[in-house]
Length: 372
Image 1 (cartoon, helix red, strand yellow):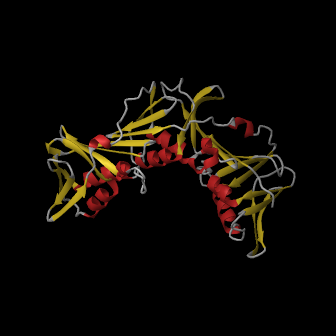
Image 2 (cartoon, helix red, strand yellow):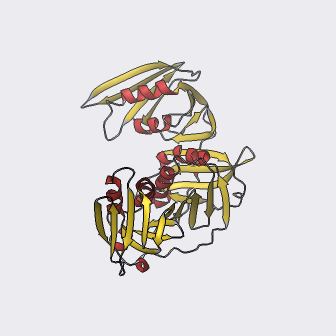
Image 3 (cartoon, one colour):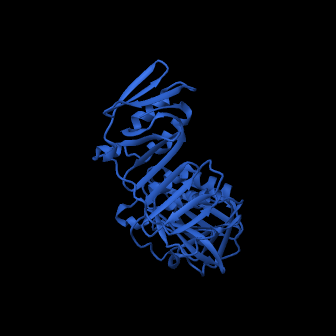
């Protein structure tokens, strides 16, 4: 194998693929990236066996071939080369070493046989549709904060993506919950997605996908089955295994009879929560909301740190109510609100609370109260 490629092009592609590679691996080949040259293209593949990424870029390939080499080391080398450098990659007859030459700099990296690299199976993914990149970014951004990190409840370690109906309109709905808070966000159902199975996309795949589509403008092609999901955009293909589990019936925890409505200026509310929570203990992060007619008092107390309180004007015509929340969870939800006003629907001090964005009727959040 022998090819020449511009440093910026190679760095961007390596930046995409090396993130999939785990820093610590018990299987040596999984620390490597598969580098293949031919037909004027350089193809790079990385996998952790659950998540696989393939990136293709144009290159001057004088001799086709393929090998595998340590992904993070190769990325670090290319990152430190001078801007504008032309990088030559080549292997010898035995493919045991990868030579990297740029100007007066030269490196030699160990290789493992390409035959040892996990084979990419051509899975049948019967459901196919295209989704706007902006819609996919929104679905991810407004739900991923609620993904559970508790490994024992593995079926909550991702975003549940499925087709649903809202007021009789077909929607693509994303839901995430950790048992303490829940985020539900919708966008119009793309053509071809009506028969899609409900799938749980793992947390790592969500993080990688969101990073990769940050600057993507064109629609993203999505293919999926019950066990795998593939996202294709530009010269990048990201394939992930899906979480094999049943997502809970989340609609049971969304209350329908919360009769007390509080409307707050979201930015001012978030700032007040942030200030008052400085006093709350690190373990509980609890903050108390004392709600009266058109008035809200936020307070926190801690035996070690003291106490804090702040009042603000709100719109609230109902009966007085005291309710406690985890301040971090409140702030997480507040940062998802795009509009100026957040509407908080309450029942009592122990029942789930609904938070809605008056600027986005297709987003809904549920937060469990806590004792304070």
